[in-house]
Image (spheres, rainbow, N blue to C red):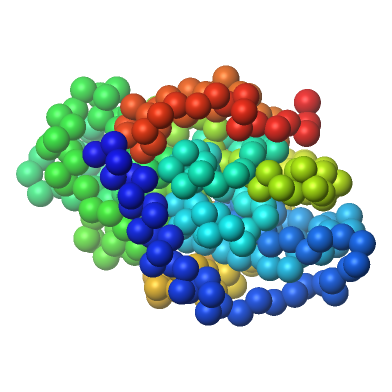
Length: 342
């Protein structure tokens, strides 16, 4: 089991590489001789809201950054695979997939800023699940993204906190990506699901109940982070400084102008659903309707938007990854974090 996560990541890289080689490359700005054009990757969630806003507002360009590619990935795990390929310079990614990319695939990345805390929820059909004990009932179907994801870690924390039978609960779990989980809930194929934001909030609009949040299960949980490749830090520190500056500016904008931020992010995600990676995820992602109302609640209630980063909390997450066998060995958070903001 301990080698399974590392082996799985290597296999996923081999499967996704042909997609990466075949995909087109679009340029938003003309390449400048004075700077290195960079590739940015984000997740198909409100977790990357600051990046969506910075791009829409033109703040990357305003800082003199040349964005060669800006790509959406269905989950942090899919983004971690892309990072392992080596053609992404910076990524707005959930912390746990960033840890597995570094530990299992030796991806030379460092965290340069936080993005948000929390941002995950356990959604239930209130007619089928009224108490935590109802999860033990015969026929209850639970959805979650695959092992090695933040919501899988939260699933294990729920099992531990509420003294559930781990073996029996995991037998009920069906693995899907977030849009598939939402659609499965809507179609009555699942009774409960752990999903990343914005999807729990969207499920509420469909009549489901957010039964537990990340904050209920994991105090001070670091949700997502901005990571960059080490060579970018070493060779182009000015680019990294500007990326962090823009990320901080966009984060402050979310907190100061949540209504406008929600409008921007909803619009960006609705379009992104038709062009995410891997391509096979487009079918489910393109079927969902993302409204500014759900994005507003996601940003203001379910996430704590902040670029602050605490190595102590990063270390705790690394140890969780070891405990759950997402990675084989622990490593020092201090060697993984390169803070550009106090």
